[in-house]
Length: 193
Picture 1 (spheres, rainbow, N blue to C red):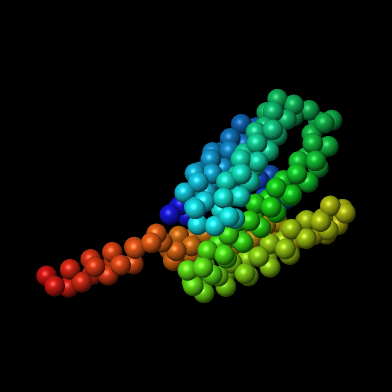
Picture 2 (tube, helix red, strand yellow):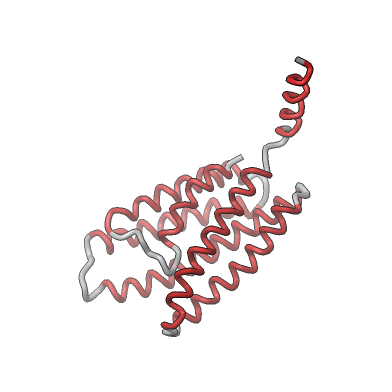
């Protein structure tokens, strides 16, 4: 369906979450490649609901933001300009990542509700609450509340793992139309032999 491509691409998102900008220098292109995988996944999923169709364009914005910041990390890593760029970059990444996760989780929740998969729908609703809390914590961190630094680091890793597990749950539980019937048919044929 496309969730496998999303999982592969989403793994690279860890490096661009607002508190963990791990992609410095040429390694930013790892995240760009991950964005391309997610774009391919959303191109496959866009027919299922409007949120996945919007995610296709949000992925393009995500890739452009990464490519726009790449020259600063590769060529202009001057000690005088980098701190200012990092603050501006963090604000932009926070906004893009919030919109990204909002549409991603809303799309998953909508799809799960449509096909009546309550397990994935419940996980998606919890993920949406966690998204609001996670990105609200970054608003507090912008006001120089340095005591949140260690908490935000742990919270970033926890949020990433929980969102990745939501995508994996979609990969395992939401399949293309007719797949369950194919599995039942194969099971019946094997049982007759």
